[in-house]
Image (cartoon, rainbow, N blue to C red):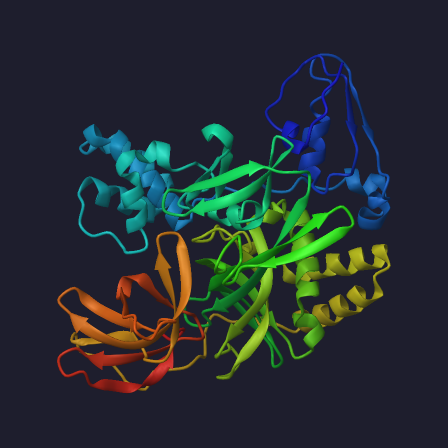
Length: 497
């Protein structure tokens, strides 16, 4: 008797009678290898068979001996994420109502981030809630313990509804774009289902049975960094830079390709489409490691993808938790000019700072990328990685940012910052995001209200300021006096402080 399983069995399974483990491939991570092998031999002696049909051991690690001698990758504890902290504070507030005067209880929180304690205190004695956290507060009304999964924190979840109202699992917003998008084929327990409808407001995805075909999403990703005093790390040379920065990530699902045997067809989300009349967007703030050098080969997405793969392998990071893309900015840590490069970003809203170690160990990761390219016989990748390594070795660390400086000085309390007319911004509505064009702004008793451009010129479209986010390095902002409407100073980029 035996069990055939995916990698899901490598953790939390203790069946003492298992005496043989057969791996039908080489686990990339040392942690995964030892965990899987450890399913055998728990009561009596056992052994492991490792099948390396593709020769991965030699190509990627050089030999079985080197593979076995690797250090186990570190574990990660995600304490610094703002949204994870707040969802846990909402739960904790219900559990410690009777402990407000318990000094021993509060002393026990000393090992946790100070921002978490502040959030908890604010829930017990409410004052104001930041706009980006307010949607989480609303979701917690029915009970935060049931609303927020431990892993996904503040990201909205969607229930998959099958025939007869059957429940076929859940996906997060980011998983929806990859696995359960309109018209796509979603697999549950090895059975295929066609996505009929996505209800963002109800958090439900309707599906129907389908044949064993497959679909792949068409996603465009753009990253907009803030190259200002909020940088976590900055390393520069005369030619380029490497920075860990706060960024905004815009992911747009434009359609999908469907494969039926040897045939493939593409479906785009547009007017007249049977699946969706418009693209689906996800817009979130996180952190990323960005780099730029004059040689275009070093800032191409293929070298970024290779570095991302090696980084995940060396530091035990799940590939779905990070991504890579080109970044766009009107400013640069080097000089005030438009700048385009590549980055590896944390794909969790609010950032888990998973890419922090990439910035700290960039040269080591690039060296490992060179070694992998040599083992795989990929000469083009090897050459590009060697050029990037030489550029990276010339970088030196600096914590003093020389960026753009406002020319409008210090403003009085009646002066506010608004998005300039004619500029693009992101409109955040529930879990959906839209890129919009601002026509004008005005001050009302409810605060700043923006007039937005609509596809129908007869339609008047408005939004409160709290619903709009300027795009880093793209959206120009202005300072105005609320009493007089006077514009103070010249328009400036949204990355300036």
